[in-house]
Image (cartoon, rainbow, N blue to C red; front, top):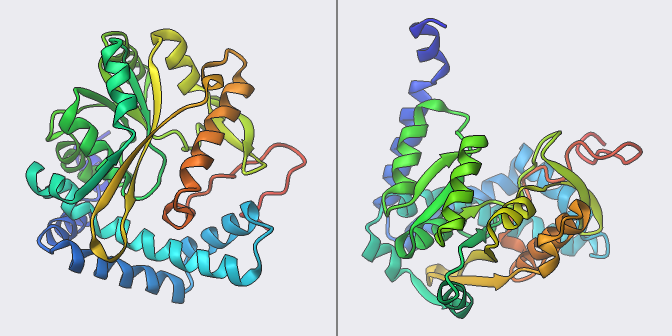
Length: 306
């Protein structure tokens, strides 16, 4: 591949724009930042776009018992929270450690971390796309030597900027390949901590179909394999966004023991039950604009093509 072709594929102009926006968002106080995010979310609600369409499809799929008015309200609230997620990249990727920590008003479940470390166990944090999930990773890396998987962005020219932002408090970022997984296992065996997003589509070969809100969804088997190879403690983690820019609350919750099962379906089901428990804390803060039910099993209707 020629150097010129690589440069074109890197999308440098788009990357420069995105980096400029993140830097600009970081200059705003949290109240203004989240107010701008809420405005973006309301635009996503009012204007036709894929985020609104997918959010509507997902919420109708997992909450069929809700009335149309209730579903509509949840869709709108979810898009507003999505807008805040976008603008919050500025503070989370650019603010200093003291300034970020000052925005965290409480930490719930710290005892689960302390108990694991006292037992000299590694900890695998599972952080779904919930609330301010970028802050979850940042907070963990501030306090513990962390190894974290990351997916290269769709805009290659942003990758170095993203990796630097996520690793600036000491986290080691490794790509989602065999080498990265080996690094995770080594860290967990050594009693360190690792973090992954457990609700991503694992693709055609990295998971099994397991119920998610009672509907089949491709679910990763990586989590159970990591536990079996490292004998680590598993904790779900998420950062709840408080209303009116009052800050954030970190939550750490224990996982069901079946998440370590050698039966892949049982383990994946336990994983999804844990994600559901996290979502139940604040359903509007989950990333419902993600195609969680893509490529369903044979005989099941694809809700995104309906």
